[in-house]
Image (cartoon, helix red, strand yellow):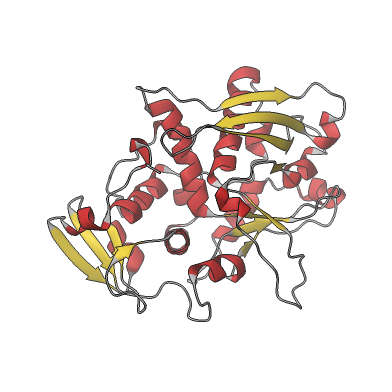
Length: 326
């Protein structure tokens, strides 16, 4: 399977040919931010804590950032903190640790599975959105068809059928349903936004099987969002704002939208960085989990607003190399 040009990143061999090379094992975030376009960084350190035998185990059972849980709709309406306000509060208090992602949990309805979100997928979702605006040759689209005219929409949220382009050449678009979209400015919106889910089932999701440890409080059955779903929700936000001047989907958005600064850092991870852990014979590219850990390191160093509080239009972001100034 060949990746589309917009999503391609340099291979190990290509990065190894960069003019300058530097090895780092400490102060990773500062060192990664302070590099030149023609420089290759080799991380010589185990990013995944030793208690986890591999990246997959860490992604399933590593430390997660827990967005505050509401116990009832009445409590949520009384507190009136939007998802981004809750994320800001929690993101700005994280410690210098390895995190696997963040989670939020529904408190109304019947499907109370914990929802998991990964910063790596937030970046990739934003990149898919940018692809639909910046690829002038093929002019790809994220198609959004909403169903929001029923009376129950106020209590259950709207639904939408979404078509999201694949990042793989000659592969069909992903088509799926997005449910529980908050679109009405009512007290129910505070609960609806926590129930969001989709019917999407790409390979990243299909084989993500997870069981909690025996004495864990939360159920093993969880819902992991992927980049396609995050791109879909960003397109839903865009649709409601541009077509209906409706800001509710954005106000109640559960996904961390990256800034250009975070995108610059992500480009460095994808285009300039290799890693050689104690298990590796040779340097290799970072895997998704290692990029996730480093993205949380960026949040820890620079804070929520500089990294995941977007003020500019993501469709205009620069996804080529651009130095992130300290």
